[in-house]
Structures are given as structure tokens and as C-alpha cells.
Amino acid sequence: MPPNFEAQSDEQRQKFILNRKRYYAMVENLDSNVGRMTTFLQQQGLAEDTVVIFLSDHGDLGGCHGLGGKQWPYEESVGVPVMVYDPRIPHRAGIALEDPTSTEDLFPTILGLAGLTPRNPLMGTDLTPLISGQVESLNREGVMLEFVAELRQRLPFYDEVWRGFRTSRYKYTTTGDNMGARPWQFFDLAADPYEQTNLIDSPDHQAEIARHHRLLCDRMI
Image 1 (cartoon, helix red, strand yellow):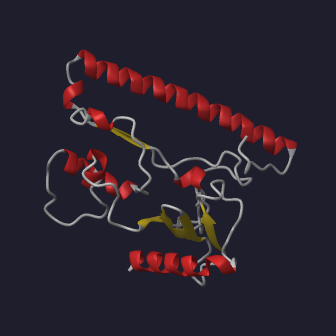
Image 2 (image 1 turned 30 degrees about the vertical axis):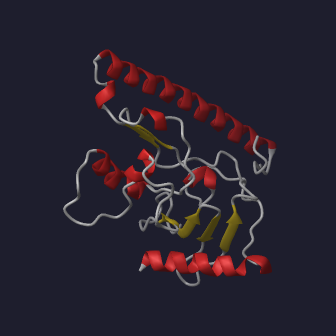
């Protein structure tokens, strides 16, 4: 288990472990079906003319931080895979990039890979230059993270809301309501990838915290 796995009781621990087993079984099933799809493309002679993009919309806590589900601003929930295979640039296969990206980038990236220019400005960034190696990094500080509350009572996620800003090294989140947005979180993901030490009150990080707060506010305006 990861170092940030927590359980309040043996019963909860066993529940988290069972859910993880189910999760890994679904991952294995999905991997098998992705393999079937790529085999079909090869058999039909389409593999060299098809860009394959694999991504997820969210992750799952699976007991990390003592939580389950997806609605929390921790990396296990918001850090999702995005993989692109473009047969036109086989030399780029297997390269891992460090720039934070967002699902907002998906549509402009698909247009870019297809060689199309959007008629109107779009949210998000075309990642094609990064994928192809034309640039080494994106010309932006990072990405905004957001979970908007369900407004209908008695439904999942009612009255839950948070927003944050993720850069290559740090993540800043406001996890409370709109009347002050407390409590706040600030993690150094390079030194603390499992987000076990909240640095929001650290004197050594106040400048970075203020910078990330401005980045979040600027992104929301």
C-alpha cells in the first residue's frame, strides 16, 4: 500500500483493499480491450493513419488519505493518464513529459493533430508542439483544477466544492466554501509526492503560496 493509505478500522481497511482489487481488475480488462483495438487497426491497415489518444476523466483515492471516491484534490484523484501515439513521429514513442495538462487541452489538441485551426478561441492549449517535440515545454505556468458543487440536495457531491492550481512542482488548493475558501492546502509534489505534509503555514513557502493564489485568481477571472 502507498504510504498515505489510511483506514479508521479493520472493516474500512478491508473495504478499501477490496475496492482496489476491483479497480486493478478493471484496469486489466481495459488494457486487454485497448490491445484488441490496436490489433484491429493493424489488421485493417489503419494503424499508420490513426492517432491513438488514451486518457481518463478522473482517478480514485482508494483509501489514500483515508478517503474513497474521486471528489478530492489529491493526485490519486486529479492525476489522470494521457497518452498519445502518433505514427507520424515514431521516434517520440515512450517519451514522458512533465508539463501539467488538463482535459481542457483535449479538443484543441485533437484539432492540432488533425491540422485544423479553430474558428474561434478555445479553452485549453494545443499540445501538438509538445507531443511532436517542436517545443520542450508549454508557455504557461500550470493548470487550474476544479470541482463544482452539486446544487441539488440529497444527491452525491451536494455542497462540495474546491478549486486549485497545479504547476510542475506545487499544488495549491482552496477546499472550503466561497466564504473564505478555507481550509487551504499547499504541497511540494517533488519532495512530497504522496501529499502528506501541508505547507500552507510554512514560513519558507509563503512567496510560492502567494504566487499560486494569484495564478488561481487570474485563471478564474
